[in-house]
Length: 474
Image 1 (cartoon, rainbow, N blue to C red):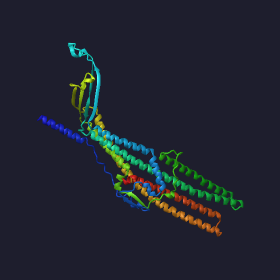
Image 2: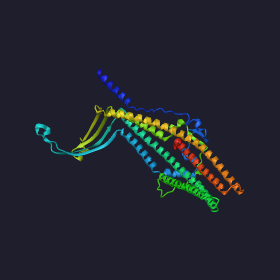
Image 3: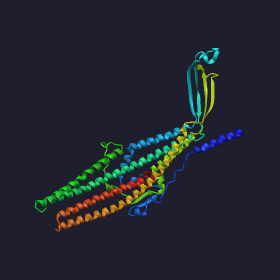
Image 4: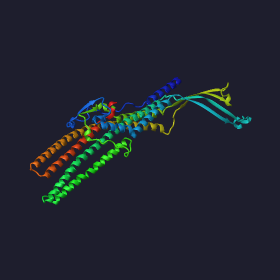
């Protein structure tokens, strides 16, 4: 009766231990809204948002610039961070294979040669002695640690989750890289377009200065007017240097992203007019965002790794069983190793049950549980950040549309005013200085339109990246 109770107790303990070693696997619940932003925030959005399950992978092609597509291909092919991320993925996958192999029986071929001499005192008062001798052993051995309580299973699950994490981090690095390359390209194109518009303003300033100087020469303008015109021209000319610096910095940044030295490679100079913000904005459904954004998938993989670590730490609290066997040939000379009577074998089973570890094992389990809670909180925060980024990009794009519309109207009005000023000047109704002022105002309105269009294109790129970018087709 006591024997049956003891055996039952062992099996019950083993079952409870195995259950205890199973880590939590369910992802924490996160809110999934029906829409990314409220309708009143998007009232100014001129594009139509289409929510879909599958979208194109190369999101930057939505801008319709062939030269941008070529630039992105160059950047992706040469970027060193992506190469490092690919290597980390390969290393993580190899670690998974190694972890799986460690759970299988390990077979080795053992060979040993040695010389032995026993002391006379070993055999007591008989004073019996054995002369020194050589001994040789050779044969295969097998060792195996059965995964009774899930240690090996959880270790492989942890390694697999870490491999998935590195894969998703590679996707996130790719998305970040392409997003940064597009953003830098847009900034360089915007700065170049601003320089073109600003040069028109400077040219108008120079013409105005000539007119004021001519008027001063005949006594119809004051020296103050001349100095004012000179100051305006110099101030507008000074605004060109920061724009030129932006273009140079963006060019160098693209070279580095492409894995090139700035002195050896110059990226193509893109024009802002090449970028077309699509009339339809293809976005993933809010429920699909959790499966599209690589940073969310990476956080989920990290959560799985933390869960497996809990199971692994729990399994370490329970016994470890090791089975081993070997077949040996033993002899005093190498020639006799394979002769009759040299064969030997051994079978062994070992069990190790932690009894006292100074609280290390239980503390490691509590540490793993706390790490899991931290990973769960990071996962929730990553999801919240993702929805917040998409909502912010959408509303920013709506405000950008309103700004572009207002700037375009202002530019049209300024151009019309400039044309009317030219007509009035030809009819003798106004002086040439008024014409120059109107033309300068038109150039300034053009500069404002360029900046508004640049912001809108940049926010469109941020929207595509926030929505998952290249992973939208996965």
